[in-house]
Amino acid sequence: MEKLDATPQPQDLESAAPQNANSNVGGPTDGGRDAWMTIAGCFMVQFCTIGYSNAFGVYQDIYTREFLSNKSPSDISWIGSFQYFMQYAPGIFVGLAFDAGYFRHMMALGSFLEVFSIFMLSLVRKGQYYQVFLAQAIGIGLGQALLFIPSLTVISQHFKKRRSFATGVAVTGASVGGIVWPILLNQLDQKATFGNANRAAGAVAGVLLLCANMLMKPLPVERKAMTNVYIGVKSVFQDIAYMVSIGAACLASLGLFFPYFYLQLYAVSQGVAPRLAFYTLAILNAGSILGRLVPNFFADRLGPYNMIIPCLFLTAMLLFVVLGVHSFAGIVLFGFFYGCTSGSYISLIPSIIGQLSRHSGQPGLRMGFAFTSVGFWILIGTPIEGALLHPPGSNGPLAWSPCIIFSAIAVACGALGMVISRIIFVGRGRNGGLGQLI
Image: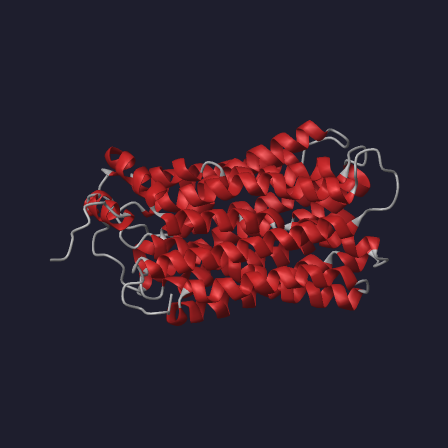
Protein backbone atom coordinates (compact mmCIF):
# COMPACT_ATOMS: atom_id res chain seq x y z
CA MET A 1 0.00 0.00 0.00
CA GLU A 2 1.31 3.39 -0.89
CA LYS A 3 2.26 5.47 2.13
CA LEU A 4 0.36 8.72 2.40
CA ASP A 5 2.37 11.89 3.04
CA ALA A 6 0.49 14.06 5.51
CA THR A 7 2.93 16.95 5.21
CA PRO A 8 1.16 19.92 3.60
CA GLN A 9 2.82 21.25 0.47
CA PRO A 10 2.92 24.99 -0.38
CA GLN A 11 0.37 24.49 -3.13
CA ASP A 12 -1.95 22.80 -0.63
CA LEU A 13 -1.74 25.81 1.65
CA GLU A 14 -2.42 28.08 -1.29
CA SER A 15 -5.48 26.12 -2.30
CA ALA A 16 -6.60 26.04 1.33
CA ALA A 17 -6.95 29.81 1.28
CA PRO A 18 -10.51 30.73 0.32
CA GLN A 19 -10.54 31.29 -3.39
CA ASN A 20 -13.28 33.87 -3.10
CA ALA A 21 -11.00 36.04 -0.97
CA ASN A 22 -10.00 37.80 -4.11
CA SER A 23 -12.39 36.35 -6.63
CA ASN A 24 -13.20 38.70 -9.42
CA VAL A 25 -16.62 38.67 -10.95
CA GLY A 26 -16.63 36.99 -14.34
CA GLY A 27 -12.93 36.08 -14.30
CA PRO A 28 -10.29 36.86 -16.95
CA THR A 29 -11.65 37.29 -20.46
CA ASP A 30 -8.27 37.48 -22.28
CA GLY A 31 -9.59 40.37 -24.34
CA GLY A 32 -12.48 42.73 -24.83
CA ARG A 33 -12.90 46.49 -24.57
CA ASP A 34 -12.43 46.84 -20.83
CA ALA A 35 -9.38 44.56 -20.84
CA TRP A 36 -7.55 46.50 -23.53
CA MET A 37 -8.60 49.87 -22.08
CA THR A 38 -6.99 48.68 -18.85
CA ILE A 39 -3.81 47.78 -20.76
CA ALA A 40 -3.81 51.27 -22.31
CA GLY A 41 -4.12 52.80 -18.85
CA CYS A 42 -1.35 50.53 -17.54
CA PHE A 43 0.82 51.68 -20.44
CA MET A 44 0.40 55.30 -19.35
CA VAL A 45 1.11 54.46 -15.71
CA GLN A 46 4.29 52.61 -16.67
CA PHE A 47 5.30 55.58 -18.86
CA CYS A 48 5.01 57.88 -15.83
CA THR A 49 6.54 55.55 -13.22
CA ILE A 50 9.27 53.21 -14.43
CA GLY A 51 9.71 55.22 -17.64
CA TYR A 52 10.34 58.37 -15.62
CA SER A 53 12.63 56.53 -13.18
CA ASN A 54 14.61 55.09 -16.08
CA ALA A 55 15.52 58.67 -17.01
CA PHE A 56 17.36 59.15 -13.73
CA GLY A 57 20.62 58.88 -15.67
CA VAL A 58 19.83 62.39 -16.92
CA TYR A 59 19.47 63.65 -13.35
CA GLN A 60 22.62 61.74 -12.32
CA ASP A 61 24.58 63.55 -15.03
CA ILE A 62 23.06 67.00 -14.29
CA TYR A 63 23.52 66.62 -10.53
CA THR A 64 27.09 65.28 -10.79
CA ARG A 65 28.33 67.98 -13.17
CA GLU A 66 26.26 71.01 -12.10
CA PHE A 67 23.28 71.03 -9.75
CA LEU A 68 24.78 68.99 -6.87
CA SER A 69 28.45 69.12 -7.83
CA ASN A 70 29.36 69.33 -4.14
CA LYS A 71 28.24 65.69 -3.72
CA SER A 72 29.89 62.45 -4.88
CA PRO A 73 28.33 60.18 -7.56
CA SER A 74 27.54 57.67 -4.81
CA ASP A 75 25.68 60.29 -2.76
CA ILE A 76 23.71 61.36 -5.82
CA SER A 77 22.87 57.79 -6.84
CA TRP A 78 21.19 57.35 -3.43
CA ILE A 79 18.47 59.70 -4.72
CA GLY A 80 17.66 57.47 -7.67
CA SER A 81 18.06 54.19 -5.81
CA PHE A 82 15.84 55.42 -2.96
CA GLN A 83 13.24 56.51 -5.51
CA TYR A 84 13.25 52.97 -6.92
CA PHE A 85 13.20 51.59 -3.38
CA MET A 86 10.15 53.67 -2.48
CA GLN A 87 8.36 52.31 -5.55
CA TYR A 88 8.96 48.74 -4.41
CA ALA A 89 9.27 48.80 -0.60
CA PRO A 90 5.58 49.36 0.32
CA GLY A 91 4.68 46.59 -2.14
CA ILE A 92 3.32 44.11 0.40
CA PHE A 93 0.96 46.73 1.87
CA VAL A 94 -0.04 47.98 -1.57
CA GLY A 95 -0.67 44.37 -2.61
CA LEU A 96 -2.88 43.71 0.39
CA ALA A 97 -4.81 46.91 -0.32
CA PHE A 98 -5.31 45.74 -3.91
CA ASP A 99 -6.65 42.39 -2.71
CA ALA A 100 -9.00 44.29 -0.40
CA GLY A 101 -10.45 46.27 -3.32
CA TYR A 102 -8.76 49.67 -2.91
CA PHE A 103 -7.38 49.92 -6.44
CA ARG A 104 -9.11 53.22 -7.30
CA HIS A 105 -8.06 54.86 -4.03
CA MET A 106 -4.38 53.99 -4.58
CA MET A 107 -4.38 55.15 -8.19
CA ALA A 108 -5.90 58.55 -7.32
CA LEU A 109 -3.61 59.19 -4.34
CA GLY A 110 -0.51 57.97 -6.21
CA SER A 111 -1.25 60.20 -9.20
CA PHE A 112 -1.58 63.25 -6.95
CA LEU A 113 1.60 62.50 -5.00
CA GLU A 114 3.77 61.95 -8.07
CA VAL A 115 2.63 65.07 -9.93
CA PHE A 116 2.81 67.23 -6.78
CA SER A 117 6.34 65.99 -6.01
CA ILE A 118 7.60 66.63 -9.55
CA PHE A 119 6.42 70.23 -9.24
CA MET A 120 8.14 70.44 -5.84
CA LEU A 121 11.35 69.22 -7.50
CA SER A 122 11.13 72.21 -9.84
CA LEU A 123 11.37 74.52 -6.81
CA VAL A 124 14.48 73.06 -5.13
CA ARG A 125 17.60 75.19 -4.86
CA LYS A 126 20.94 74.40 -6.42
CA GLY A 127 23.28 72.57 -4.05
CA GLN A 128 20.49 71.68 -1.58
CA TYR A 129 20.78 67.88 -1.46
CA TYR A 130 18.09 67.35 1.19
CA GLN A 131 15.49 69.26 -0.85
CA VAL A 132 16.13 67.12 -3.92
CA PHE A 133 16.04 63.95 -1.81
CA LEU A 134 12.71 64.82 -0.19
CA ALA A 135 11.00 65.72 -3.46
CA GLN A 136 12.47 63.13 -5.81
CA ALA A 137 13.46 60.13 -3.71
CA ILE A 138 10.65 60.15 -1.16
CA GLY A 139 7.77 62.11 -2.71
CA ILE A 140 7.92 60.83 -6.29
CA GLY A 141 8.94 57.35 -5.14
CA LEU A 142 5.98 56.99 -2.76
CA GLY A 143 3.53 58.24 -5.37
CA GLN A 144 4.89 55.74 -7.88
CA ALA A 145 4.57 52.91 -5.34
CA LEU A 146 0.81 53.46 -5.24
CA LEU A 147 0.67 53.35 -9.04
CA PHE A 148 3.24 50.81 -10.21
CA ILE A 149 2.27 47.53 -8.47
CA PRO A 150 -1.55 47.91 -8.74
CA SER A 151 -1.22 48.68 -12.46
CA LEU A 152 0.64 45.41 -13.00
CA THR A 153 -1.55 43.29 -10.73
CA VAL A 154 -4.84 44.41 -12.29
CA ILE A 155 -3.77 42.79 -15.57
CA SER A 156 -4.30 39.34 -14.01
CA GLN A 157 -7.99 40.20 -13.56
CA HIS A 158 -8.42 40.49 -17.33
CA PHE A 159 -5.84 38.08 -18.80
CA LYS A 160 -4.80 34.50 -18.07
CA LYS A 161 -3.69 32.61 -21.18
CA ARG A 162 -2.28 35.77 -22.77
CA ARG A 163 -1.07 37.33 -19.52
CA SER A 164 2.63 37.48 -20.45
CA PHE A 165 1.97 39.24 -23.76
CA ALA A 166 -0.57 41.63 -22.22
CA THR A 167 1.93 42.48 -19.47
CA GLY A 168 4.61 43.01 -22.12
CA VAL A 169 2.40 45.47 -24.00
CA ALA A 170 1.63 47.37 -20.78
CA VAL A 171 5.22 47.64 -19.57
CA THR A 172 6.32 48.82 -23.00
CA GLY A 173 5.05 52.14 -21.67
CA ALA A 174 8.13 52.19 -19.43
CA SER A 175 10.36 51.82 -22.48
CA VAL A 176 8.59 54.57 -24.41
CA GLY A 177 8.83 56.76 -21.32
CA GLY A 178 12.50 55.93 -21.08
CA ILE A 179 12.92 57.34 -24.59
CA VAL A 180 10.77 60.44 -24.20
CA TRP A 181 11.74 61.57 -20.70
CA PRO A 182 15.54 61.79 -21.23
CA ILE A 183 15.11 63.78 -24.44
CA LEU A 184 12.48 66.06 -22.88
CA LEU A 185 14.45 66.70 -19.70
CA ASN A 186 17.81 67.19 -21.45
CA GLN A 187 16.48 69.54 -24.11
CA LEU A 188 14.53 71.67 -21.63
CA ASP A 189 17.41 71.76 -19.15
CA GLN A 190 19.75 73.01 -21.91
CA LYS A 191 17.33 75.47 -23.54
CA ALA A 192 15.38 76.64 -20.47
CA THR A 193 16.10 75.90 -16.81
CA PHE A 194 16.13 72.90 -14.49
CA GLY A 195 12.96 74.19 -12.83
CA ASN A 196 11.05 74.65 -16.09
CA ALA A 197 12.12 71.21 -17.30
CA ASN A 198 10.55 69.64 -14.23
CA ARG A 199 7.41 71.77 -14.45
CA ALA A 200 6.91 70.52 -18.00
CA ALA A 201 7.51 66.95 -16.82
CA GLY A 202 4.90 67.41 -14.08
CA ALA A 203 2.33 68.69 -16.57
CA VAL A 204 2.89 65.74 -18.93
CA ALA A 205 2.66 63.23 -16.07
CA GLY A 206 -0.51 64.88 -14.74
CA VAL A 207 -2.36 64.62 -18.07
CA LEU A 208 -1.33 61.01 -18.68
CA LEU A 209 -2.16 59.83 -15.16
CA LEU A 210 -5.57 61.49 -15.36
CA CYS A 211 -6.27 59.57 -18.58
CA ALA A 212 -4.97 56.34 -17.03
CA ASN A 213 -7.34 56.67 -14.06
CA MET A 214 -10.28 57.00 -16.43
CA LEU A 215 -9.22 54.11 -18.71
CA MET A 216 -8.36 51.38 -16.22
CA LYS A 217 -11.25 49.06 -15.33
CA PRO A 218 -10.63 46.88 -12.26
CA LEU A 219 -13.11 44.07 -11.69
CA PRO A 220 -15.08 43.99 -8.42
CA VAL A 221 -13.52 41.94 -5.62
CA GLU A 222 -14.91 40.71 -2.32
CA ARG A 223 -13.17 42.56 0.51
CA LYS A 224 -12.23 39.50 2.55
CA ALA A 225 -8.56 39.21 1.78
CA MET A 226 -7.36 40.96 4.94
CA THR A 227 -8.81 38.18 7.13
CA ASN A 228 -6.68 35.62 5.30
CA VAL A 229 -3.34 37.41 5.52
CA TYR A 230 -1.81 34.82 7.88
CA ILE A 231 -2.62 31.90 5.57
CA GLY A 232 -1.36 33.84 2.55
CA VAL A 233 1.93 34.88 4.18
CA LYS A 234 2.54 31.34 5.48
CA SER A 235 2.05 29.88 2.01
CA VAL A 236 4.52 32.42 0.59
CA PHE A 237 7.34 31.43 2.96
CA GLN A 238 6.71 27.70 2.47
CA ASP A 239 6.78 27.95 -1.33
CA ILE A 240 10.44 27.14 -2.02
CA ALA A 241 10.34 27.79 -5.79
CA TYR A 242 8.74 31.19 -5.20
CA MET A 243 11.25 32.17 -2.49
CA VAL A 244 14.24 31.09 -4.61
CA SER A 245 12.92 33.08 -7.58
CA ILE A 246 12.57 36.18 -5.34
CA GLY A 247 16.14 35.69 -4.12
CA ALA A 248 17.31 35.44 -7.73
CA ALA A 249 15.42 38.62 -8.65
CA CYS A 250 17.05 40.42 -5.71
CA LEU A 251 20.55 39.43 -6.86
CA ALA A 252 19.83 40.43 -10.45
CA SER A 253 18.43 43.80 -9.34
CA LEU A 254 21.64 44.51 -7.47
CA GLY A 255 23.44 45.04 -10.78
CA LEU A 256 20.77 45.29 -13.46
CA PHE A 257 20.11 49.04 -13.18
CA PHE A 258 23.74 50.16 -13.47
CA PRO A 259 23.44 51.32 -17.14
CA TYR A 260 20.12 53.07 -16.44
CA PHE A 261 21.91 55.25 -13.88
CA TYR A 262 25.40 55.60 -15.32
CA LEU A 263 25.38 55.04 -19.10
CA GLN A 264 25.10 58.75 -19.95
CA LEU A 265 27.91 59.59 -17.51
CA TYR A 266 29.98 56.71 -18.90
CA ALA A 267 29.55 58.05 -22.43
CA VAL A 268 30.69 61.54 -21.36
CA SER A 269 33.71 60.05 -19.55
CA GLN A 270 34.69 58.25 -22.77
CA GLY A 271 34.86 61.54 -24.67
CA VAL A 272 31.35 61.57 -26.17
CA ALA A 273 29.94 65.10 -26.47
CA PRO A 274 27.20 65.81 -23.89
CA ARG A 275 24.80 66.82 -26.69
CA LEU A 276 25.09 63.23 -28.01
CA ALA A 277 25.60 61.35 -24.76
CA PHE A 278 22.06 61.86 -23.50
CA TYR A 279 20.73 59.89 -26.50
CA THR A 280 22.36 56.75 -25.08
CA LEU A 281 19.61 56.44 -22.46
CA ALA A 282 16.92 56.93 -25.09
CA ILE A 283 18.49 54.22 -27.26
CA LEU A 284 18.76 51.87 -24.27
CA ASN A 285 15.04 52.29 -23.62
CA ALA A 286 14.24 51.94 -27.32
CA GLY A 287 15.90 48.53 -27.21
CA SER A 288 13.79 47.59 -24.22
CA ILE A 289 10.60 48.04 -26.30
CA LEU A 290 11.65 45.03 -28.36
CA GLY A 291 12.75 43.24 -25.21
CA ARG A 292 9.41 43.72 -23.47
CA LEU A 293 7.29 42.56 -26.42
CA VAL A 294 9.01 39.67 -28.21
CA PRO A 295 10.05 37.49 -25.22
CA ASN A 296 6.65 38.03 -23.58
CA PHE A 297 4.90 36.93 -26.77
CA PHE A 298 6.84 33.65 -26.75
CA ALA A 299 6.56 33.28 -22.95
CA ASP A 300 2.85 32.48 -23.34
CA ARG A 301 3.89 29.56 -25.56
CA LEU A 302 7.26 28.46 -24.20
CA GLY A 303 6.88 29.52 -20.58
CA PRO A 304 8.23 32.57 -18.70
CA TYR A 305 11.08 30.63 -17.06
CA ASN A 306 12.36 29.48 -20.44
CA MET A 307 12.54 33.09 -21.62
CA ILE A 308 13.80 34.90 -18.52
CA ILE A 309 16.79 32.63 -17.87
CA PRO A 310 18.60 33.16 -21.21
CA CYS A 311 17.75 36.88 -21.09
CA LEU A 312 19.47 37.20 -17.71
CA PHE A 313 22.59 35.35 -18.87
CA LEU A 314 22.77 37.57 -21.97
CA THR A 315 22.40 40.67 -19.78
CA ALA A 316 25.35 39.57 -17.64
CA MET A 317 27.45 38.91 -20.76
CA LEU A 318 26.70 42.36 -22.15
CA LEU A 319 27.82 43.99 -18.91
CA PHE A 320 31.19 42.25 -19.24
CA VAL A 321 31.38 43.34 -22.90
CA VAL A 322 30.98 47.05 -22.05
CA LEU A 323 34.44 46.95 -20.44
CA GLY A 324 35.85 47.07 -23.96
CA VAL A 325 33.44 49.64 -25.39
CA HIS A 326 34.76 53.21 -25.64
CA SER A 327 33.32 54.77 -28.82
CA PHE A 328 29.95 56.42 -29.27
CA ALA A 329 28.90 53.81 -31.84
CA GLY A 330 29.89 50.99 -29.48
CA ILE A 331 28.00 52.54 -26.55
CA VAL A 332 24.91 52.96 -28.74
CA LEU A 333 25.03 49.28 -29.77
CA PHE A 334 25.56 48.19 -26.19
CA GLY A 335 22.65 50.36 -25.01
CA PHE A 336 20.26 48.94 -27.60
CA PHE A 337 21.07 45.28 -26.94
CA TYR A 338 21.20 45.79 -23.18
CA GLY A 339 17.77 47.38 -23.36
CA CYS A 340 16.50 44.27 -25.19
CA THR A 341 17.77 41.77 -22.63
CA SER A 342 17.22 43.75 -19.42
CA GLY A 343 13.80 44.95 -20.59
CA SER A 344 12.66 41.37 -21.13
CA TYR A 345 13.73 40.45 -17.59
CA ILE A 346 11.82 43.37 -16.07
CA SER A 347 8.65 42.58 -18.02
CA LEU A 348 8.77 38.81 -17.39
CA ILE A 349 9.08 39.02 -13.59
CA PRO A 350 5.31 39.66 -13.11
CA SER A 351 4.60 36.61 -15.31
CA ILE A 352 6.96 34.48 -13.22
CA ILE A 353 5.14 35.59 -10.08
CA GLY A 354 1.81 34.84 -11.75
CA GLN A 355 3.06 31.36 -12.72
CA LEU A 356 4.12 30.71 -9.12
CA SER A 357 0.83 32.10 -7.76
CA ARG A 358 -1.45 29.94 -9.87
CA HIS A 359 -3.22 28.46 -6.83
CA SER A 360 -3.08 31.57 -4.65
CA GLY A 361 -6.19 33.58 -3.87
CA GLN A 362 -4.09 36.67 -3.09
CA PRO A 363 -2.15 37.77 -6.20
CA GLY A 364 -1.60 41.26 -4.78
CA LEU A 365 0.09 39.86 -1.67
CA ARG A 366 2.52 37.77 -3.71
CA MET A 367 3.27 40.52 -6.20
CA GLY A 368 3.73 43.02 -3.39
CA PHE A 369 5.98 40.73 -1.32
CA ALA A 370 8.19 40.16 -4.37
CA PHE A 371 8.63 43.84 -5.14
CA THR A 372 9.16 44.75 -1.48
CA SER A 373 12.00 42.22 -1.32
CA VAL A 374 13.57 43.45 -4.54
CA GLY A 375 13.29 47.08 -3.41
CA PHE A 376 15.86 46.67 -0.62
CA TRP A 377 18.45 45.35 -3.09
CA ILE A 378 17.77 48.12 -5.59
CA LEU A 379 18.28 50.57 -2.73
CA ILE A 380 21.87 49.45 -2.12
CA GLY A 381 22.85 48.39 -5.65
CA THR A 382 23.59 51.67 -7.42
CA PRO A 383 25.18 53.35 -4.35
CA ILE A 384 27.59 50.39 -4.12
CA GLU A 385 28.40 50.88 -7.80
CA GLY A 386 28.80 54.62 -7.20
CA ALA A 387 31.22 53.94 -4.32
CA LEU A 388 33.22 51.58 -6.54
CA LEU A 389 33.16 54.18 -9.30
CA HIS A 390 34.55 56.94 -7.11
CA PRO A 391 36.07 55.51 -3.89
CA PRO A 392 35.94 57.83 -0.85
CA GLY A 393 39.00 60.08 -0.69
CA SER A 394 39.86 59.46 -4.33
CA ASN A 395 40.47 62.47 -6.55
CA GLY A 396 41.48 60.53 -9.65
CA PRO A 397 39.42 59.55 -12.71
CA LEU A 398 36.26 57.47 -12.36
CA ALA A 399 37.05 53.73 -11.92
CA TRP A 400 34.56 52.01 -14.23
CA SER A 401 35.91 48.44 -14.23
CA PRO A 402 35.12 47.49 -10.58
CA CYS A 403 31.49 48.63 -10.71
CA ILE A 404 30.88 47.04 -14.13
CA ILE A 405 32.32 43.69 -12.98
CA PHE A 406 30.29 43.84 -9.77
CA SER A 407 27.08 44.46 -11.75
CA ALA A 408 27.78 41.63 -14.21
CA ILE A 409 28.48 39.09 -11.46
CA ALA A 410 25.31 40.07 -9.57
CA VAL A 411 23.14 39.57 -12.68
CA ALA A 412 24.84 36.24 -13.47
CA CYS A 413 24.09 35.02 -9.92
CA GLY A 414 20.46 36.04 -10.43
CA ALA A 415 20.33 33.96 -13.61
CA LEU A 416 21.66 30.90 -11.76
CA GLY A 417 19.04 31.44 -9.06
CA MET A 418 16.27 31.38 -11.67
CA VAL A 419 17.63 28.08 -13.00
CA ILE A 420 17.41 26.60 -9.48
CA SER A 421 13.87 27.95 -9.02
CA ARG A 422 12.80 26.35 -12.30
CA ILE A 423 14.27 22.99 -11.29
CA ILE A 424 12.37 23.08 -7.98
CA PHE A 425 9.16 24.17 -9.72
CA VAL A 426 9.29 21.28 -12.19
CA GLY A 427 10.49 18.78 -9.58
CA ARG A 428 7.43 19.41 -7.42
CA GLY A 429 5.08 18.91 -10.33
CA ARG A 430 3.66 22.41 -10.22
CA ASN A 431 3.88 23.04 -13.96
CA GLY A 432 0.32 21.91 -14.46
CA GLY A 433 1.14 19.23 -17.03
CA LEU A 434 3.01 21.65 -19.25
CA GLY A 435 6.11 19.48 -19.31
CA GLN A 436 9.20 21.58 -19.81
CA LEU A 437 7.25 24.54 -21.19
CA ILE A 438 7.39 26.70 -18.10
